[in-house]
Amino acid sequence: MSDASAGARWRTGIWRRLWLLVSSALILVGTGAFVGCASLVRVAGPAIGGAALYRARCEERIIALTLDDGPVVGSTEALLEVLAAADAHATFFLIGERAELHGELVQAILAQGHEIGNHTFLEEPTFRLEDAQARASIERTHEVLSAYTDIHWFRPGSARFNDEMLTVAAELGYQIALADTFPYDTFITSTNFHAWYIRRSVRPGSIIVLHNAHGRGVRAAETLGRVLPLLQEDGYRVVSLSELAADPSCTLPIEPLPEVAESMP
Image (cartoon, rainbow, N blue to C red; front, side, top):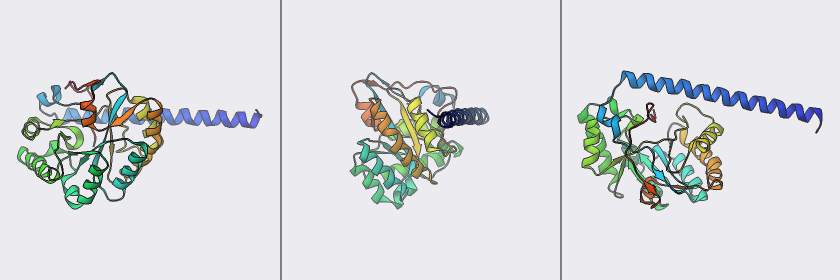
């Protein structure tokens, strides 16, 4: 190897390490912001104490993929194309207003064997709503989505919820699902980072969350195009939440959330 080639490789390695260091610092800053926000907006104790699923315990290498905030014209189709190419399934947590406007995309999601979940009627932090508003948002979205299929899963906006949301979810037969693998795609734009973070972080039973609005869906499609083949090389099957729940190698503990819950702004 020439001195020039060796020098180029050394410089590339230095930049890669610097990039990982900066990315890690951003994660720590973001995590600190989430902790600070949680201390300011304290949600009801029982909700934080153990009422949501954020990962399963699986003996086999199986993980669930979830996609929030759709359907969105253009990016939802891109996501479906990538998932079809990888023979992977996902749970699309849909915004009721967008599902109402784009029923053809809801049908396309279901036609490819994916499932849909309730992500409230508008894209907004659900915990900021009055109880009556939150109930109305969840129930209105249920009416829209249940016209297509049975709905089993609910994810509140920003992944924070209170006792009223728990009550409504129970009345509608929902399980609240969060995630344990969130590659910070709401504020870090690098798809290289997203793919690296997902592959580094998942373990059997993990639940991944990516987002499908405000340009994030296009990035999510690129991320999945990168990471799904790598996960499959690692022996993972990527499935919907209901497929994860039905897998005989998995149990679904409803555990206390980590100190920094997988908050998704």
